[in-house]
Length: 230
Image 1 (cartoon, one colour):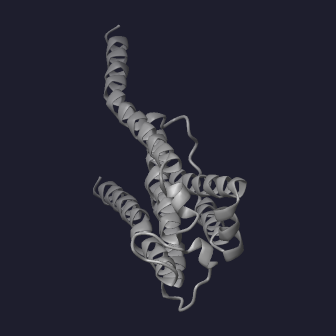
Image 2 (tube, rainbow, N blue to C red):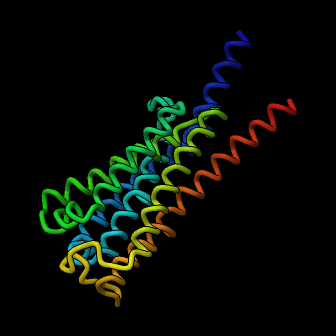
Image 3 (spheres, rainbow, N blue to C red):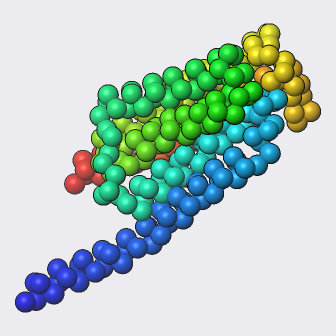
């Protein structure tokens, strides 16, 4: 009888302790969706049709801010509802899928098509969101030391390919895109607009991936050290 009471009390305590975490997760999820709405209904959408740097701010805000907020919100609010997508193959697959989506949409012909055709622009934006959610969900839904280590590798791979593309766009000596989609904004135009977009991707855009990868690696290493001491 006493054992049954203790078990019931333990379950009640666990539910009470999990409630704030779930509340935080739901808040992050709502923030992520609110950010998406603000981005897609805001001034960056028309600006991205004529400014490569504005396009890059929109793109990076989706994959580096909104997507991780949504993924972390899901992981905290419903930790047992989302089966982890782990294993080295999944980590490589997530990074390669993200690389394919990001690089292919920055090919001149597709970027210019998205800038001038509404349907293609919508497909581009949804592709960015899907790729970002795949990477961040795979990385952030892990709970074991191995899962967190693999999640860190997923983010490192994504950080590397985004930095590579950003560097290429930021140092190329000629305009890769039609001048009509690189008219510019923020006081720059033409080739400088393209360079600014590349610099943003190589620096600001990759930073959340790098920071999250280091945090996950630190958690995995600390758990390993704790298990060895035990």
